[in-house]
Image (cartoon, rainbow, N blue to C red; front, top):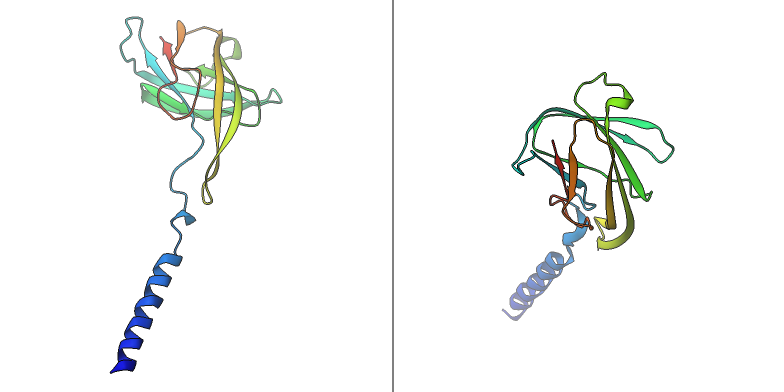
Length: 160
């Protein structure tokens, strides 16, 4: 009887040890570094839906990387280059648009890193963010919402 109780107590202790040995940080289930979120508005300040939008990124070497095509959107999330101090985006509405007919937005920032967890690693935070509409073809203006990008809330509004 005494040995049976010791076996039950030993089994319970072993079970509790095994349960506590599992670590919750083994899988990162969410993106960590925030993207630039751009919302589109009309001249009255209401949401504006863009039928077709192409976005290209200019890398730090000055080479244009063909980006994404978006359809029927009122906002877009774009990754910023965390290895540089600025990212340049070309916006246009037709696939074969020449470079001089593309809107250009330059985003300048300082980066820092924040540790999230063992699974997710570090999160890049963008501070002192400034926006410049270098060339306006279809866009009428930009309105910054914040000078920090710590999450994916709307950071910038573009007027069409």
